[in-house]
Structure formats: structure tokens, C-alpha cells
Amino acid sequence: MDFMERLKDNINSLPDLPMKLMLGYLTAKDSLVLYALPGGQVIREYYDGVKDQSLNYEIGIKTKDQQKANATLWQIQTHLEQVEEINSKDSSFEFQKLSVSNKPFLSDQDEQGFLSTCWI
Image (tube, rainbow, N blue to C red):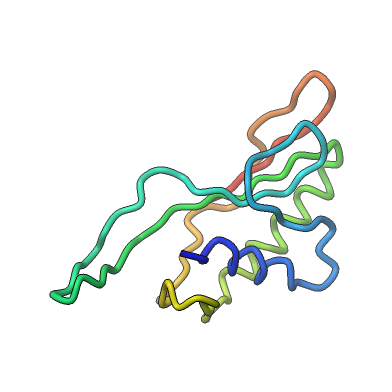
């Protein structure tokens, strides 16, 4: 399923996004990432085997610049609340809706001054 790649492309199409979103986890340096979380579930299964699923993802950013982190995540969050369509390139999913379940929040600051900010 290419949903994560299409969501990444959708977010990276934002003009003036300070950092490019990558798939994976936060790195030792500045990074903006999208990754899957546990807890996804099948909502409905049809007789032909097609399943409606609810999947959980998180976007995280790591940077020493708190203003950049906040601006980036709020820009993405505002955009995602307006997304009405994401198209699969390989027909592996049919997009129904996207729900933003949280607002950006500061989750950690390490000894080198890097801030980790995440939201779901």
C-alpha cells in the first residue's frame, strides 16, 4: 500500500515548507518524519475481501529551532484538516477521510538542545 508515500508527497507539496518530510523515524540531526503507529484496525470487511481500515500515523520533527518546529507542524496540521483526497498511484487504497486527532506538542529536549515535537 502506497498511502504513506502519497501522504508524504501531499505534505511536501506545501509551498514554503521549511523542511522536507521523510518516511522513517527522527534522526540525530534536524529531521521531519512520518511513521506508522500501532493501533490500526479493520472497521468493516466486505464479502469480496475489501476492508475499510483506520490507520494511525505520527509526524515528528527534531530541531534546535522551536519556532521552526512549531511553524512547520502547525502549517502541516492546518493543511491536513483540509485534505479531501489522496490518490494511490498503484490502486492499493481508496482514500475516505483523514482525521487529525491531536495538535502539535513539545515532547522532549535533549542535552544538545534538540527539541522533539510530535503530533498524531
